[in-house]
Image 1: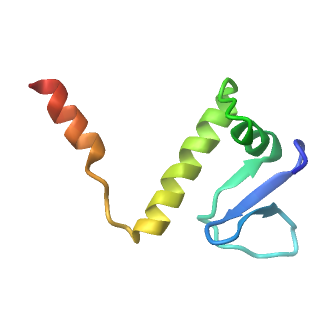
Image 2: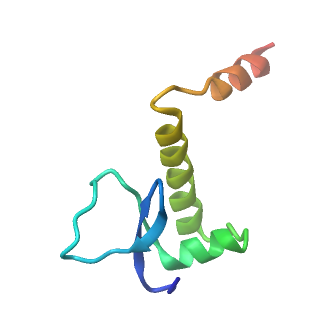
Image 3: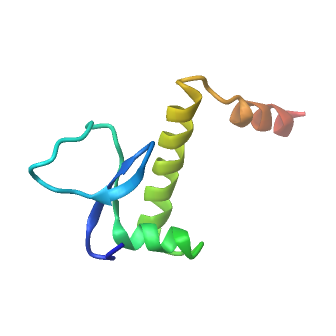
Length: 82
């Protein structure tokens, strides 16, 4: 992974470099190589890494859950109101 390269994340195969001649689904996330490397190091101090990794995790969860929503956020909000 090259920090300056932009990658598209295939939910079944992982990240690969973006090539202009290659088509991929529009909804697949695009990430900087730097963010991918930061995630590998578990370094989320960069705002761009935080934003891109949050979007990636939401995308992957949605993909693998087949559109089924998790109720975790609502449960936590309900618990805070008790």
